[in-house]
Length: 413
Image (cartoon, rainbow, N blue to C red; front, side, top):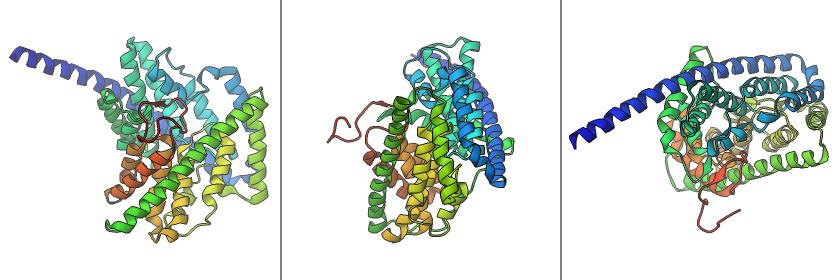
C-alpha cells in the first residue's frame, strides 16, 4: 500500500513538471505576443486620433483585410470558434498563420476606425502559438486540448491584466454549464506567467476606480438582480444581432471582401455624419468616464450599433472590450434610476454584460475583483449570475456547446 501511494506522488510530480514547462513556454509566447499587440494597438489608436481623415479609408482597409483572409486565411477565419472546436474535437493543428493574420487585421481595423475589441486577437494568438508545440512535441489529442486551453487563458490574462479571470475563462468558455478541471493547473500557471511576461515588457493596463462600495443590504442586492437581468438581455441582443447581421451579409454578398467594404462605408459614414468618434475603436476614455460622471443614456446603444456593424460585416478584433463599454455606460445610465453610485454600477455592468454574452459568470466575477477590488465581488457575482441566466443559451462564441441548461424550467432556447 505504501508503494502505491509513493508511485502516485511520483506520477504527480512528473505531471506537474511536464505542464509547468509547457505552461511557461506558452506564457512566454502568448505574453510577448500580447505585449507587442498592445503596443501596436496604442500606436494605431493614437495615429487615428491624430489623423482623423484615416477613417475615410475604413472601407478600403476592410476590403484589403477581407481579401487577405480569402486568399490566405480561410482555414483560420473562424477565429475563437476554431480554437473551441479543436478543443472539443481535435482534427489538425491550428495553422500558425492565424496569429499574424488576426494581429494585422485587428491593427488595421483600429487604425481606420472600426468598432472592435482586442480579446479575440490575444486569444487567437495565444492558442495558435501554443498549438505549434503539438508539432514539436508530438502531443496526443488529450494533451493538445489542455495546451489550447492554456493558450486561451494566457492570451486573455495578458491582454487584460487579469490572470485569475484569464485562467478560469479558458476553462469556462468551452461549454455552458461545465468546466474542464483537468486543465486547471496549466491554465492557472500559463495565465499568471503570461500576465507577468506582459508586465516585464512594459505593458500598462487601464486603472478603473470604484471609490465606494455600499454595505450589503436589501436594496443594493435587489438592484443587482434587476440590473443583472437587463445586462443579460443586452448581451443576448448583442450576440444575436452580430450573428444575424453576419449571416445576412453572407447570404447577400458571396464575395467575402465586399462585406467589410460595405460595413466600412456604413461605419465611416456614420462617424463623419454624427461626429461619433467616441463609439469606434476600443473606447477606453469613455469607459473611464463612466466611472467618473454621468454620461448620455444612449451611449451604450450607439456602441452596440457600431460594434454590431463592424463585427457583423467581417472586421477583425474581438467582442469583449466593446461589451465592457456597453456594460459600463449602461450601468452609468441605470445608476440614478436604481439610486446607486455611478462607479459601482459602471463596474458591475462592465463585467456583467460580458458574463451574459460569453456565458462566463465565474471568470467575469473574478475579473471584477481583479480590476475593481474584492469589495465589489458580492455585487458583481450576483449581477453576473443573473445576467448569465437571462442571456439565454447562445452567446458570442457559436462553437460553445451546451453541457447543461441554465435552469430547470427550460431545456433548450
